[in-house]
Amino acid sequence: MLKVGITGNIGSGKTTVSKIFELLGVPVFSADAAARYVMTNDQELIGGIKASFGDESYFEDGSLNRKYIAGKVFNDPAELARLNALVHPATFRAFDSWSREFPNAPYLLKEAAILFESGSYKLCDYSIIVTAPKEVRMQRVIARDDISIEEAQSRDARQMPEEEKIKLADFRIKNDDSELVIPQVLALHQQFLALAQTK
Ligand code: ATP
Image 1: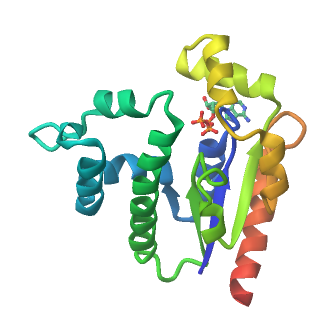
Image 2: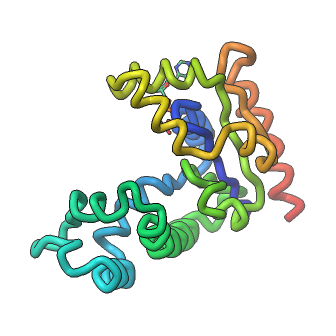
Image 3: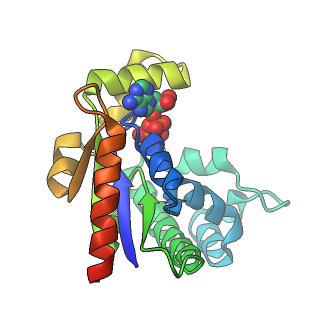
C-alpha cells in the first residue's frame, strides 16, 4: 500500500482536491484534524504536554486549554517547536492506526498543511503539491474566512514558500484557471494505482 502526502499553501485548494480523490474511493487522512483530536485523546501526548507546559494545559473535564497553550507558543518559535515535537509523533501514531483500517486500498492520501515543514513527507512514498498563484490563494482565503488581506498575507508568510515546496514535491496539481483539476487528479490516480502494483 502506498502512502501519498498531499499539501499546499493556504488557499491552494488541497482540501478541495483531496475530496476529489475521496470521491474516487481513496481513503483520505486529515493530519490537521488528527492533530486536534490527539491533543485530547492520546494519553501519552496529554501526559507529555502536561509535563512540558504544566497541568493548566488542560481543564478539569479533560478539554484542552487552547488559550493557555496558544499564549505559550505564540511568538515563541522554541516553545512551538517543543509542542510540535510532542504532537507530530502522536499524529503519526494516529495515521498508522488509521491506515490499518484499509488493508486493501492500493494507496492512501495524507492531507497535511505542514507536510514538508514537519518532515512527514519523508514517511510517505510520494508527495503532491497543490498550487495556485498567491493573489488567487489570498482571494479565496479572504472569501472563505472573511478576513482582511493583511491577515491572509500574514498567514501565508508564516508558511514555507510555495516555490520551495514545488522543488520538494514529486507531483504537482495546478489548481488555478490554467488547467482543469479533475483530469489532473484522474491522471495521478491512474499513476498511483500502477505504482501500487509495482510496490
Ligand atoms: P487552507 O490551508 O487555508 O485550509 P486549502 O488549501 O485546504 O486551504 P481549500 O479550503 O480547499 O484550500 O480551498 C480554499 C477556498 O478556495 C475554499 O473556499 C474552496 O472552496 C475554494 N476553491 C478551491 N479550489 C477552487 C477552484 N479551483 N476554484 C474556485 N474556488 C476554489
